Image 1: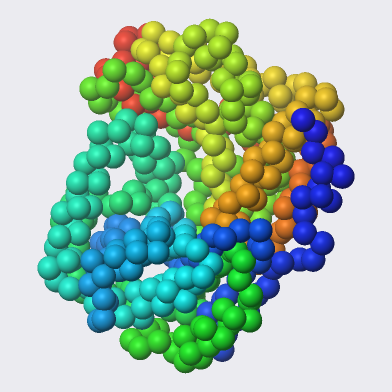
Image 2: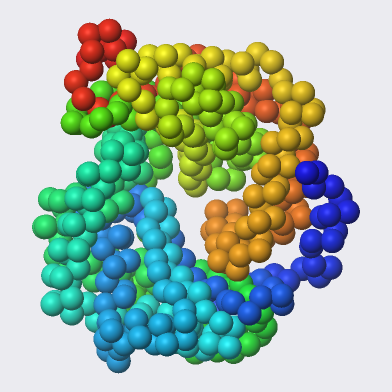
Length: 439
């Protein structure tokens, strides 16, 4: 199905529903009014993640993510859970290598409750010792789960190898050792240093009036917060990303399959090539009709799971391909990956084939536009990484502006000179495979 200009006009609101306010203490409020929804999504986005941590406190950002659910001066952990459950809402959080987000989904009528809970945990979390020790045990179990999930573990190890001795390479959860050694005082100090108003974005999407949110948050955005770093102090130091480490690595684990990750440097978040990169990702491994899925799974039956992934960061990025296969098929899978990326370098797509993947990507965007959670996330990320708002219509125009030659040029840039980072996680390799991996 084609997403032409008429469809864009019909699906987009006539007036820009987005508004932004920066309060005097530096707190940023974003909202996108979506009058067709009864649901409301609101999130607090903290400009901190794994890359802001030192080796001594690996996993502290994720530890904080857990602790902000564990009670304030006026609410216990059970109180927070019950208040959200009573209105049929959902309260969750996640940590990445560059940001941490706490997000609520509830009915628009309950927006005051949502704001009250979010502001309460940001200002008044008390980090009780008993809750801290209990959550330490929970996180250790979470780390054990990842260690028993080869696909997740392979990605963690890949980042560690391609970004050695840098925050982008450290595991988001931390390690068993770092979490066992983590002190409550270190977590509280990190909280006070990073969870300050000028490092936060509150993002809201749903049927809500922006001025109503501004009024509700006026007291919250007026003064410095107790115990926090001075407002408008320079942002916390973040070490620049190093060049991606190239090489091949085999990590032995007693798994049934070999889990392969093939990666090259990718565009950063604000790159002018980001839309071409999104399309290249769709073409190579973005779905069942993608080149890699068809070649590796459908035509040759070498794997059940195969996909590509684009991971942009503030100042760097990774374009990667994942496949899980048997030992005997490892070298053939790598050969087919190389042939697929070589093909797009040598032969630009036809306009017809490009239109197919453009419509695929736009269709995904339109479907996400029907979710208040997706819109809340989108406007926040665009503010944090690009410092501007993008409507769905504008994104689709940017996608349509990409040409076959743009895609080919980007492929030549990303896949040039055989610069590769390849990780294999699996049992001891056969002699033939080991020779290729220099094991």
